[in-house]
Image (tube, rainbow, N blue to C red; front, top):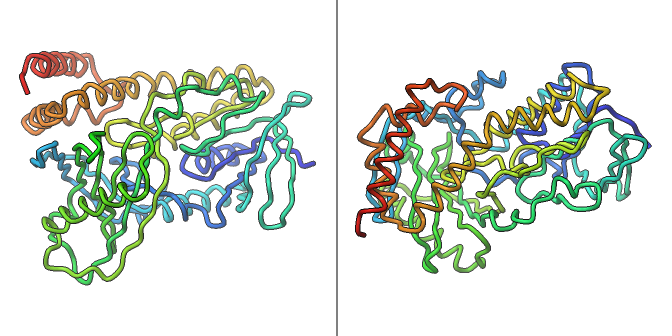
Amino acid sequence: MESVDLLVVGCGPAGATAAREAARRGLETIVLEKDAVVGSKRVCAAGLRPGFCETFDLPRSLVHCDTPRLALFDAAGREHAMAFGPGHTSTREELDATMAALAAREGAQIRTEALFRRVERAAGRAVVEFADLRAGERRRIAARYLFLATGASARVEGPQLQRLAMMEWPRGLMTTLQVRVYLDRPANAIAYRTLEMHYYAAQDGRQIIAWMFPKRDHLAIGLGVLGKMRGEPLRAELDAFVGRVHDRLYPHADVVRTKQEGHLLYGGMPRPALADANLLIGGTAAGLVDATNGEGIFEAAMSGRFAADAIAGARDNPERAGARYSALLTQRFARRLRHRVRLMRFLERRPARFGMLFERLARSPRFVEVLQREDCDRTMSDRLFLYQQALRFGLGAVTRRE
């Protein structure tokens, strides 16, 4: 049986960042990735917040489009545009593959077609069993630390993972479907400068969050709905949404080809427990996703960085490392992400509230600017301003008759 300092399960932004930064600090690191090609099956709009490449020392060649404009569409289809960032777009194939390559360059071993099955504890180590799909064998690795970064479909179950389990997890899962639209000529110029988010009701009344993100050679057009939705109605919802985007942004262009892809995402509360001594969980598997827009790449990569920092700082003290990791993540993200879930549920109860909020954002550039900052970067003036805006919006939303 192999032995390693850090075993990472999942090679998305969380796992690849943890592997890269841990290997750079001298930790022997192995990454298990279930897919044959890193990033090949990720369904994601792949929007990156301003400064993402600089924050994580990634090449700017990853960026397809710089998008200085954010357009929010309310339930009535009204557009509310505002300055943003600029943000950036990429694809998960390029992003994840690049991050994995950089981790390998630092000395981490990336093993594809390796499917995580279960974990046990023995002599203070996490003993992981995985299926080597290429060889058709079951194998085991004993790790001083285990970092689970397996996305929304994370299997956090079994006797050794009970303290990390979350009974409410299935209620936060979203069914998503996205199509990549390749055109014979460019769409309208505004499409390549804009991140679009749409909020409206599905045919069955459930809230839909839909998006259009421009890429170098295609438009990523998709939607998600909380809970499960059968394939036929989900495809019908996507077809209707794609039709509306077509009429606005590329009525003059012919579609050369499309690529449809579906997956589970997450839009609920963060996990209350993020570590159990030498077992750590990060990225989407930790529930680090903004429920209002599905953003989670930045949070995922930061969770990988925090994991590497905590482990490197306390290699021989798992309790201390786990506590340090939990504290870093909780302080940085938990409060904001919980607020975003509550805000989303408040808006969903009366869909007209989306339009009210978007109108307020479009009228106040400072509101948009402050919301883009992390809690740790906000001044006391920023916080007071946000409380005032929240109070005004809340009172208006409750008293207004829709």
